[in-house]
Image 1 (tube, rainbow, N blue to C red):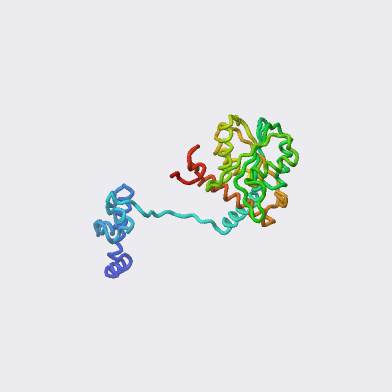
Image 2 (cartoon, helix red, strand yellow; image 1 turned 60 degrees about the vertical axis):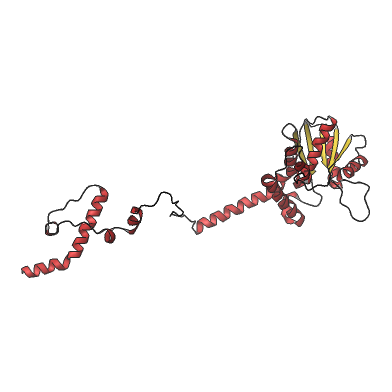
Length: 303
């Protein structure tokens, strides 16, 4: 009977399993900070506590964390949990992106073709590269306002075939305005030279220098530009004239383009998307030279 009982005990709880149980109990009690307390019984009395072997029972991550790392070595990798959307999460993100894109597409043209005229502006600056349809709208805008003068800007005129009678866009726009209703108005042409500098910015620099050389006080002006080009022109004029001049802006309506559905035509898509990229480039990458410097006019270092 005794032999049978002993055989049953040895089969149910082998020596190695009892040793492993004691080792794990020691590690748990040490981690909890309570110490090891053995309960009376055949396991505790027959086998005293044995400290666990470090490399066999201790987890591998604890062994790795216990190895001292030199303080001068930087930590290059770290393990972090990553949350990823589920299928419904991806669908929700896709729907949100489509909604934002739809709202942005409908408001993109209005954002670029900004309309912010000033009530106290006494000078109307017209960009000379505008077409006849847009110059006609500039004439209407002049008659609605209380302007004392018109200033036309622009660089050398691009031409092929028969040479036109004007040398610059500024002269061409001034001639058109005088022949179509503004013959009794003071129109000043401020041409810009041929340069590697951004053309609209250079035209604004020439307006600033013309005002200083002729003693004209430009306290508030309105800038007349074309459609989607208006916001970028407004930004470049503010960069050139500085904070001491208040600058309003007006945008001419396009002739063959529906602003509400600009994406429906190739010309509308090119106009809006191209000006969006140009505006982003101007904000982040366009850094002209100091006022009055060689780089401000020519965009290259002086020799």
